[in-house]
Length: 173
Image 1 (spheres, one colour):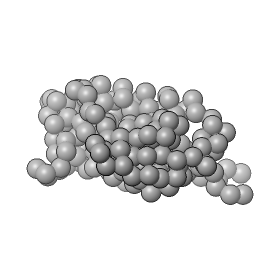
Image 2: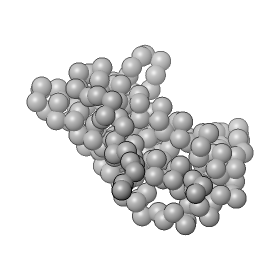
Image 3: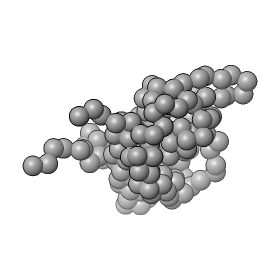
């Protein structure tokens, strides 16, 4: 059996989005238990030249739910981060999960012959839909998810590799 476009995109997004939702909740609980204002986490950066936690989580939603929307419309651009607090970021991830769970494999697999243009100002990068999802969206998605995870770890949240992996799709019977 060949792997489908749905399996490599939506199913992968959902696995990691579930993990992100989980480590966001652990981060919230850690902050609450240790008297840390979650607003400090929202603005935290790994390095001065990197974007803050807010941008990382917004990008996780943008490069999953937004990437599927872009694959459907044929156009995708960079995220425009709204001003959200920690709870707002948790809701953004929850909403991305809900939206992606509503997408059917048939709907995504039908996009296989399509094209997507990434547009940043005047710059345009044309992709086939599968190449957009696999060589642009998924790497960006994982980069931002890992960076958000790292920011929480740096802040002292007790996370491990299993928190990042999420619910793996193991063989059943």
